[in-house]
Length: 500
Image (cartoon, rainbow, N blue to C red; front, side, top):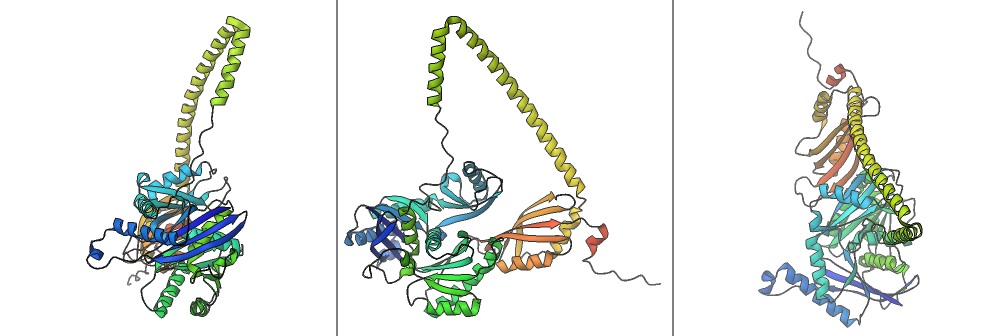
């Protein structure tokens, strides 16, 4: 019988669950939480971050020791705020080709260089003939060293480092998720809340918000505000899934009654509480008092016990497959060549040498012809691109002027990247990335720009916790139809008529 230990922590406490796994059955042996605590007196101001991490590990190690937890497979959870999350759109590719494509794209868009971070990713589909949408998650080296420092102080050796919101979503998908429904998961963990949108059983969008240190009425108001903000963004993040239909709050019997009632009243959505411990075998004496905050730990345990691949694992990220072992092939070829040489003598050996020389010459000729063909293809692609660009007959200067007049002011939004390209046939396409102060500005921008000649779509809106002014990033595309020159000035006021 295997023993599994799942652990995570936040600014206020550390949580753990010990389970025994036999086949597909999970039995909870121990579950609890320990406060982080804080130094007192003059030590409080002088304590460094490293010392605080070591102290947390020591407190956690003592708690595990008191529960008699010995050797076990250790799974550590990381909160959403400790990672950088990128949504990438990649060309058609097989699963073996995705790691290299994701690494190259993430290196251009991430705040961290590949040498300073660990990257894992999760594709949203599995058809190699279609463009691949991928969620890349990046753990900075500093955060990984901090996790390892805490684990070492607790005398633990982690087998996996997993992402907390995805583990909670996995638990929900196993126990209560209708596959066709778009829903919002609310998981309150310490002084944070994980807000995860699921569509068709997959994570479509995830964010974590910090809760104030205040009475429950103020915290409930903040939770409702954060849910409303997440719902506004989720419309952009799940273009094929539709709007959120229900809200599920992790908790036990009698938990979050006020919050659920206010969700039904203010957000006009179905809402209910989901007990994460219903999917495992746990005695009443072992079950903790705040079951909702243990949802991610139970998700980690179930995935590990049932042999499922974890959505994100920073210790075992998705990588390119190793090259095939050619030693066996070379050994067989060498043995065959030796047998032929022995049986046929010098004549056969000489003929083989001639054949090798011809093959080498032909291979060199083939390499040269492929290089010439590639140069010709590159020139043909350039000529075709110019031809398509000219065929669109779009006056891009007037289009950009028209867009700037309709775009929100620089106080509300700015564009960081823009790409103009010809459309299929007439017209053109504009793709741009920008920053806004609030996600509602993106919806207002779409309404202002959209008309008979412009169709604009915002594919995603993502919160940027590092920014203070423009806290949301959006990614939009706009289709432009061909029109007459006179129609470019249709938005200008009519000039006064000349006097007789």
